[in-house]
Image 1 (cartoon, one colour):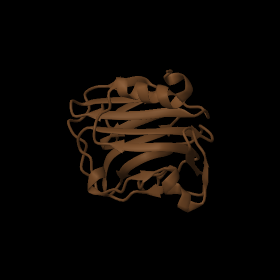
Image 2 (cartoon, helix red, strand yellow):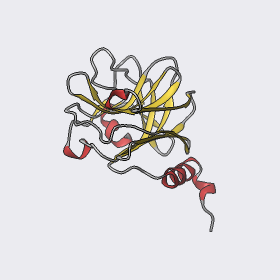
Image 3 (cartoon, one colour):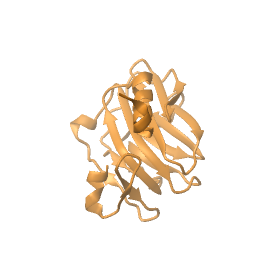
Image 4 (cartoon, one colour):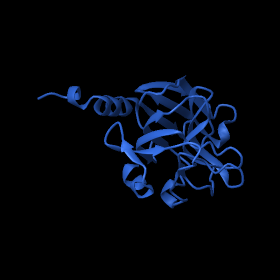
Length: 191
């Protein structure tokens, strides 16, 4: 994200290296468009390091969600809680975890075609089963720090680092290793 955001002139220090600093209410965001690689309807993982400037508002982190273009997937913060959902979050299509604060956090949402959603906060998972067997196809663009849903764009007020979107449902071991390595590289391994 730092490399993408450098062009916008608002880079900042991040958890890993440089990060994007999104300042509300200026509505700063990154539009990745709707490329084929992000039209994911099966297994999915969305990962980022995030630091909110405050926790009183709904903020979008990564979203492919639009009122007129389909509601595919969303990772966000709402009502002091982290959320990951598919298909608009109806019924079993949403998982939530943790109480948000203004510290840096590693956040990973995963979905698998067996209908399991997981949301990892600093390596610890919350799980929701019984979700839809696929993510709906959507023409909505993938946005970082905002969504296209009219009247509910929720622009981010905070910093993001190392945003990744994958067409695989990362395992608990993978997420825990990623968190341990990135949160404390000097203590992760010794020779």
